[in-house]
Length: 146
Ligand code: DQA
Image (cartoon, rainbow, N blue to C red; front, top):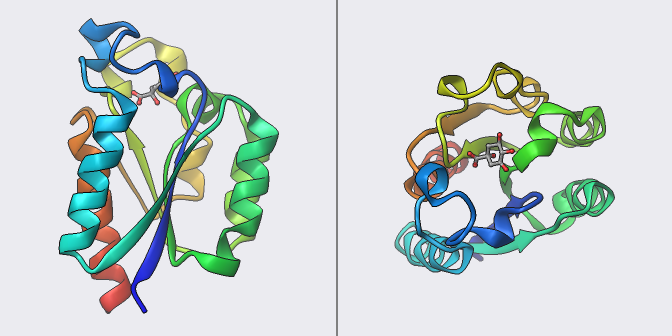
């Protein structure tokens, strides 16, 4: 059976396409999801692609992930920089985790330079737009094979 990867998107990522296009580009979350599905199929994996503006919902999804998922790709949006609850949930499970950001958070405001998610992630990709999600899937595919 193909491994299923949980791809989690946090607050405001549902607005991609019209949200600050100079920073995030014109790609929508639907386009990113479609690209992830294609890439996952090439890698013999399935994706379960979700978005929520709600921190508690993201925590619940992370807690449930080990039941049916082999790894997590997470773009926690602004919760990246604020959420100890997300860090605790990610630390509580034993799955490979790749953190993704569309923008290069280190080139932006100081408050975006710190990530709670990074403390629980195996790796982090930022600044490459939607391509970062596909690269994260590739990294997970390799890890799961080894
Ligand atoms: C983001 C970066 C965060 O700082 C911001 O709050 C987002 C999107 C990114 O993908 O570049 O919502 O995670």
